Length: 258
Image 1 (cartoon, rainbow, N blue to C red):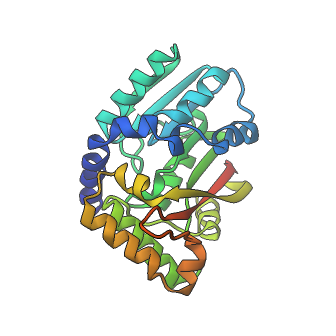
Image 2: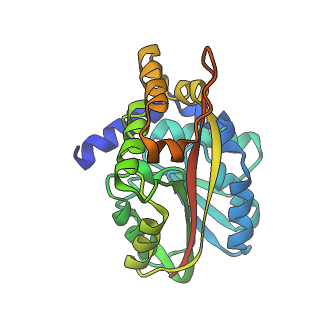
């Protein structure tokens, strides 16, 4: 799939479900948001760029701590939903920009912090995004990313990525945490912190957030039940008679300094 095809898929998928991502418990809450703020230690004079802002939740938690946040997204409907949410909260120091994460329209070294949460697995080139994030960050500034990660076992990674893509065709590829660390280093970022964590999801709710048809949910359930050993170890699925399956999604949090 070409980069342009991926972009169109992302815009279609998330344009249709923008409001759901504002209210999604996975995206709106979670200890990872506060963890991110704690690790970064933002300062009042900082300018922050939040790439692929989605429902605007990362922009929301940083806005009270800094002078200005640029909330950016490829999908206009997402930006509109985030802006409405922020206005309801009385946040006035957030600006909204529609852009492509792998071609940031900013001069070099203009931001103190670049953030991106639960989005890079949709990008046509994660390394290009990391390179761009590093480029627009000032010397000494920070790049902070949270994204879904995959097992280091290649066959298991392919299986889990296929599971994700069945639910959401705009899912391009998610990488392992060591691979992420390598991409940071390749972009000239010193990895200050790297950690992983898991969240348990209900299959039905997770699929409904992307508007999956009943036959797609059936296929997703079958993939959980029939997962090969290494993928099954990664999912740690809980299967119940009559449905109600749950499984784990793994995330990585990385903080790099330019």
